[in-house]
Image 1: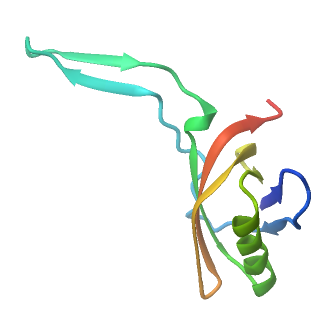
Image 2 (image 1 turned 45 degrees about the vertical axis):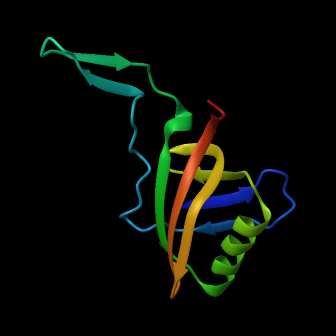
Length: 114
């Protein structure tokens, strides 16, 4: 189950069931790799931040849910997302709704209530 709400409560939220191909558990560390002149490799690991996370959310929406998601995207900057991975503040980076099928990229700013 996924819930999107405005952070100020001034727009109605939307709740729906995500499809199984949604991705919430992918994480990347802040890592870079450089080839050195002596034939070796230098790896720089700068840790992990919740703000590096990006979620791919897919769902089948009814007309009311689709209208609600469009309103959130058009009228809000930051949103709250509640999902199986936790409670987050972030933004909708990209969203497509085609024939009721939602394909959404959510970029996390921070994880809340840790």
